[in-house]
Image (tube, rainbow, N blue to C red; front, side, top):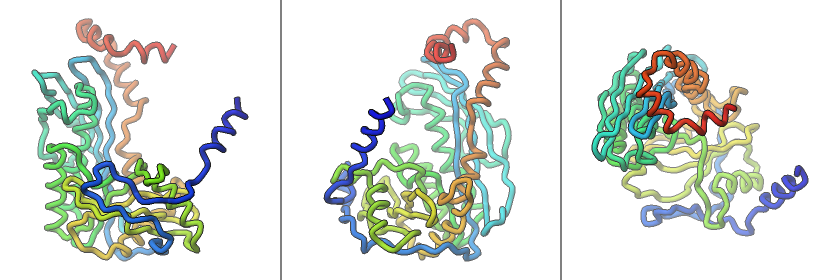
Length: 339
C-alpha cells in the first residue's frame, strides 16, 4: 500500500511546462497577468509603530435537526504593537438558535459573555445565504456577518489612522446581506484611515495550466534569490463584491508557506510598510511565516469539539423526548462513528 501511495505522490509532483496566468471563473471581472520572476520583491521584517488588529471567529453546532439547530459562536479580535499586546479583549461567546420559518431561517443570537457590540441580534436568513439551505448552516453564515461587525467596531473604537486591521480571509462577499455587513467595515476603514488587509489561510486559486497558483509562485520563487518576498501584480480586479487588491506573500524566509494577501482596493497605502509589519509578526515558531496576531485570534475564537461534547453531555438529562426525537433524525452517522 505504501509503495502505491509513494507512486501516487510522485505522479502528482510534476510541474507544468508553462505556468500560464491566474485563472478566475468570473473572468469578466478580472484581467489576469502572466506569472513572471520579475514580479517578486524581497520582503524584510520591520516594525513601524503601527497597531495591528486581527479579527477571527469560530462556530460549532451543538444540536441539529431538519427544522432547527443550536450553535456556539465565538468572535474575537486582538491588538498588538510590535511584539506587545496593547489590550486584552474578551472574546464574545454566544448561542445561536436557528429555526425554519416558511421559506427562511430565523436565527436569534443570545450573548453569553464578552462586550464587543453587534448591530444585530436577530436574523431572518434567505435560503440563498445558507450553504446547504438548512438551519444547520446558520451558524457559519451569522459568524461571517459578526466578524465583519467586529472588524467595524475595532476600527471605530480601537484603531487610529495608519493602523492595520487584518481579517482572516479575503475581502470578498457572496450574498447581499454579507455585503451590507462588509460595507459597514469598509466605511469605517475609509473614515478612519485604517489599512485593511485580508489574509487567507488557504487558497483554491488555480492557473490556466491547471496548477495551484500559490504552488506555482512558490516554485517560481526558487528560481530567484529571494527567500522572503511578496508577489504582485496578479490581476486587475473590478469585481463589485471582491474589494481586494491581490498579493501572494511569503512572510518568513524559513517558512514553507506563502499566503494570499489582499489590500482594500479603495485606499492608497504604502503596502510594503504594511507587509513588513506583518512579516515582523510572522516569526513565532508556533506557525512560522503566519502573522502571530492571526494565530492568537484563531486560537481564542475557536469552538472546539471537546467544548461542544461537554455541552451536549450536560444537556442530555434535561432534554425532552420530543427534542431528542428531532435531533435523532440527523445524528445516526455520528453515533455509528463513535462505535
